[in-house]
Image 1 (tube, rainbow, N blue to C red):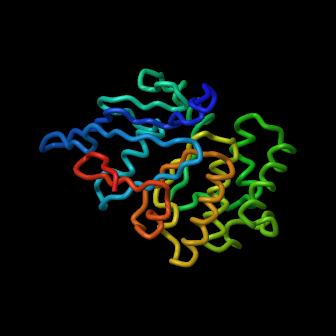
Image 2: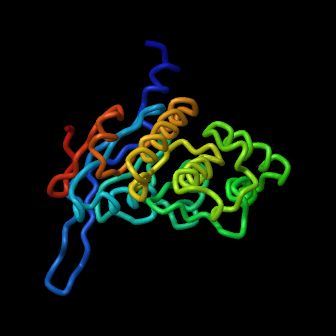
Length: 233
């Protein structure tokens, strides 16, 4: 195996020995107990488990939104545990994209403007940002809806805008928390198909928390969070 091929096959996201404990009045609540997982470029991995199991907590730790009590998060080959807040923010802006159950689009802006905003914040010119935004919206079949504000888009269309907004700055890792949870079955299936296509086309490493086992089984791997640990299903 060539050195370049070996590098491509290294995980883009790795969690090693992650422990996350919360202090409560009655004692400590240990949500994550030595979590180990990795995701490679172009791979989409499902994270399942019952409500309250800690899926969102795990995504927050992976996305550098929360610090673990123990363990290490590796992103694009670099350890992030000892980084300060400013450095963690830079890693999030450069390497991470987030999609949530609710789209969180800004209602006063059109679809193309919503996708352009994170690029403008990153310093991209308005012309370049709008051009890339139109290309991304076309990739998910929304080229005829780019000038519509969120209120004029369907739920599935809004979530597709949120997904391409998350990858507008070409991140290495996509973290999605119940991205189809607010959608009906047919719309959820269509949105997932678009998400899967984007992962393949852009070589993202995607970790998707979901209660939808039908969609989870269509991903490359299915992980389950049980008693604070991740097991392969």
